[in-house]
Structures are given as structure tokens and as C-alpha cells.
Amino acid sequence: MNKFICENCRYEQHQCFKCGELDSSHEPNAKVFQCCKLFCGHFYHPKCAAELLQSHSNGACELENKIAAGMPFPCPVHWCFRPDCKKMEEKRLKEQCGLLAADVVQGHIT
Image 1 (cartoon, rainbow, N blue to C red):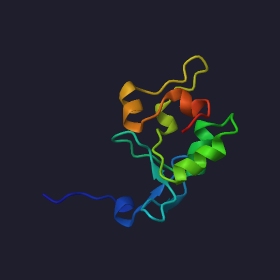
Image 2: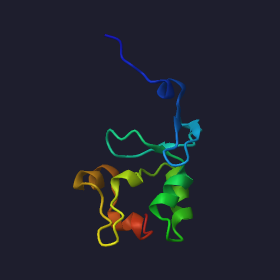
Image 3: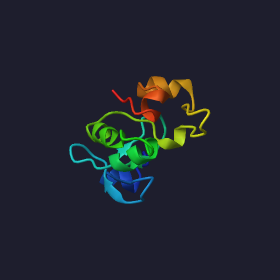
């Protein structure tokens, strides 16, 4: 049985889940990066991901630079943005991505 490979993967280009632009997803010239959650197919430009994850802080630029440098990140789809919650979807995501919810939401990305 042949293994199916989608057109995006074949041409190493994926759409940013926020802005919809199609860009390279292949290193070393990647412009969109995939969420670190296992089986999540969402790709984001570093700026788009940073704006969604830290829209109310001055840390968005720093987060953008770290994502562009290859830092794994959980995409906004896996976060609860209710003001009294702000937790990740599940504990395993924290382990997969090596992040704590407060680190991204409060701008303390290391």
C-alpha cells in the first residue's frame, strides 16, 4: 500500500492557521512552524503565533524571535483563554512542549 503524502508536505509549504498565507515549512528557510502538540497539523508564522499567545503583553516580539529560532510552542487552539483559567488543554501537552501555561500567557518564555 502506498503512503499518502499531501501536497503541502510534498512541496514543503503550509498555510498559517491565523493569516492563511502559504509559506515554506522546511528548514533551513522555514517561515511557518508547526505546533508542538502531537498530531496537531496547524502551522503559524512566528509573528502570528506570538500575537495570538501574547496579545496583551510586550513579550510578543521576544516570543516571535524564539519561535523563529526553533523553540517548540503549543498553538493557541490548545489554550483556554478564559480569564480565570488560562491553562493548556492537557498535562501531556506541557510535557510535549516543555512549557508551562503561565510562561507563555505571562510572557516568561525561557
